[in-house]
Image 1 (spheres, rainbow, N blue to C red):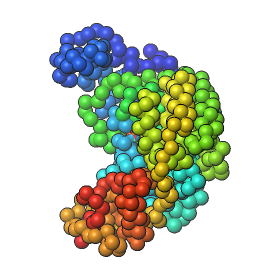
Image 2 (cartoon, protein in one colour):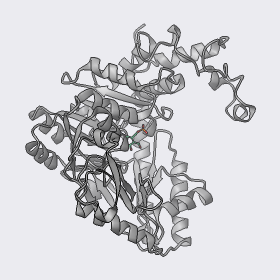
Image 3 (cartoon, rainbow, N blue to C red):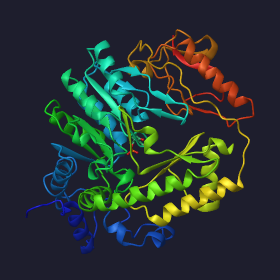
Image 4 (cartoon, rainbow, N blue to C red):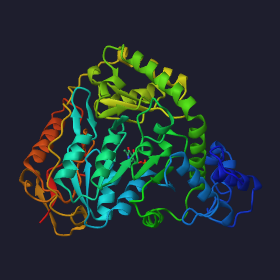
Length: 491
Ligand SMILES: Cc1ncc(COP(=O)(O)O)c(C=O)c1O
């Protein structure tokens, strides 16, 4: 059978198996839905459980694919012009860890910025590597944080020629992409491996009005959360390898080591379906979505106190913008993004993807309709008229984060040679924990890092800001005590 991009070999196999209603003497224990409690089954109906199967020859094995999974992965690789595609059932979280463990040997170092997702820090610890942290760019006018530019990557490679690889997050949550063309050129000129977390960009390749994607510029290894923008079920991601610089057998071993031996076939089949859908219909669907989003931004930008980030504000020599993301700044309402998120949910039945003190991020996807967008715009217009808050906004800023990493993060993370010291006395110690204040939503302290005066003062200012009662409290994730009075450090 000749497979084309219209084929969905894994989905077809699973559906044909499901339709047979085979008597199950395999896991899972619900046995084609019979054992699912009525409250749940009444809502979902029965058919979906016939697709929840285990590994057997008919449906192939994710860990050693020879049939429909192999074919589906090959089609995904072709769709993105990569050499190999690996389906992931625990999202790009696993993808990021797998990329680091595949590319780096213990003790290697890697250039990256703090904009990275928390899974990257997990990968650094698991792979036992040295991070060379770069300072992300803060845009105080728009309350946004950007990935580093190609110029900064060039400088970092010159300063740290020993680095094995460069890790880039593009697009960011807000849909801001960095200059991958130039970064790929720089990395390859200096013989560095380029790893890209493109979790938010599985659609980019399929529309000329979207920013250039990892697939198009020769990135060595990258990951897509197919579930974030396309139609895969949650957790469905693809890791792409597109380079002879990467040992493909090592990637296979690492991916297999990190994935469950009981993958959810419904997720796997939905990745296959989403690939076919975006290849065949992506251009048409995203043309519509881009135009709906443009219209929405225009309408939102007529409001006196709410605004939507526009491509024009971002597009530059270094950065580009994914117009399918609607980042809504609400600082002038006197309310926080968190509060407006709650109002949208409770009063308008709308849930955005995330909110911070300043912004809401409305992520559109292949299933977004014009009506959905109209409802969001209507709700924002209504909120703009009805609500006025009194929070004074915090100015988005970061301490210097390109700090000295004095100990391997893994050693600091697992160390028993630790003690707690008062925050005010922690300068100069090596940190043994991660602290991530929201905002800015990125770690200001990570294991292995030498604690600086700037970081301590920054944390102290967040604490006094939060405790003043006049502002929305700033949550500091990772603190192991009720209030952040002490930090865990290496003795
Ligand atoms: C930039 C980035 N990378 C990776 C991830 C993890 O992706 P997943 O949810 O597919 O595990 C996220 C999740 O939000 C993310 O924002």
